[in-house]
Figure 1 (cartoon, one colour):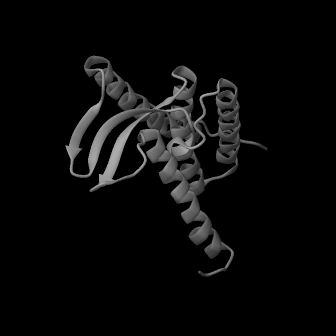
Figure 2 (cartoon, one colour):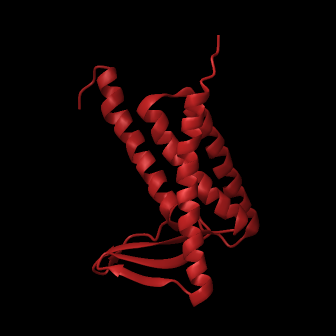
Length: 166
């Protein structure tokens, strides 16, 4: 019979909520700075600046469209992917489950922004000399970490379980 473990559900929800809240709080702080100063262009150190941009696309500004219909289609696809990730979290356990929870927490943060602001505020500008990486946010960090962990899980952990070596 199917047994519900409320402690695990609460822990899982808590992890996703902490990721979502960390993302929201950082974005709210940056947006308050933008409201007061009318811009955000903060030098942190030689490799890091905070510079606010509004991303209407998906990861790192890909598929950015001005047309509302296409934007709504992309948002609906993102919502569908979030539902699939939630189902995968329910079906998995261990390292893979926590990796998926990182992706879900970050995805929910960016989905909230897509719906509330019609764009996602990105503000972390990592660079080395004149080479700038894409501007990103805390949600993107968790999504990326979760995906890296899923790749690690697939290549190393699942291959060892199946008796394959690299």
